[in-house]
Image (cartoon, rainbow, N blue to C red; front, top):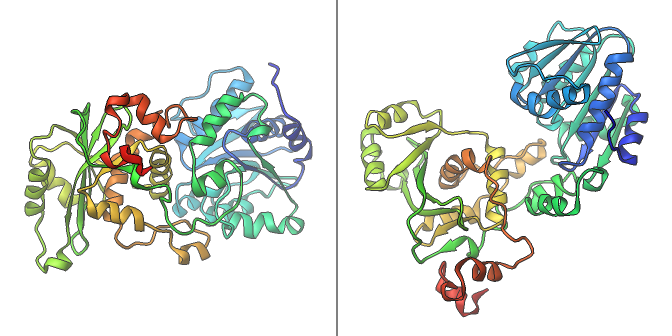
Length: 428
């Protein structure tokens, strides 16, 4: 099968003869294709020994690597349940590394080749153990990564020391992928803003500093009512000594803005001096939801007793996805596109969204973490949004239109100012 490749892809294929070979850069920039192409060449023609493909989890390995490999080979991909295959006469293992505990899964391995997908998401301890497993003479590691903060271990301890470590890396951008058309590139660029734009589009190693949602502004707020939504969702961040927070989301997937926060619940026992039992909090939540037909209630998976109390009242409780960075990345896209709007009565949520900030101490350790202060309502919103926004394709409709022009198109001239009457008078 013939493939169209760019000069950058061909260059990296030829130059990837070092012990460490790392493709860094923008999303959809062609780095995965060219790195897999080289990895397959080494599996076929390289030194003898076992190989390993590593990713954040088994599912991401299947999506990002295995399907591409078998498409290149012209064969059906193995089952997502499969953890080992034989390629070119050698065993190739699939290993997920979601946290430090994954180190134990590769202890004792002896490898000739390793392929690491999303390397900046792999724990440092796992990466260091993987180094020691590449003990066959002539062993090589191939990795792809989106940039993170400049203090990330992969940059500070490896890429910045490439002369010492027999390491080579390449910086990729969208134009290095020859199969993308200009309209699609524009769509990808419009999907990110702020720090995510710098990292995933420009390919920069940059710090996540200041506000987490810098694009959150008056266009993410509304005052007038909307028609009935397609369905309601609820997100709850449970606390005992910390506040318990909840948000009620009205969702209409086919009409902009698709996600509308209509109400908030916030109980802080440190201010009232009276903690509430799970039963009392459940009663509050039932009253908060009122007559609304809520499809799902997303709750922090660690809140075991509270979830039981909710389920005992026949409420539709689902464990939330508590991947903080994944949730923030996902929400940032839709906040920027004004697909998420919050009713002005939700004063605590609006205040916390505006003050939600990155932790500078975590940055000094090469980590992206929010400051754990006044973050309970944004967390509850993240719980409710993440599951369906990950698969949604809302985007920002008609990317070239201003917010004002978009409102006119969606609501017609007669409906202009529907979200906020102040904006009809030139507030924008």
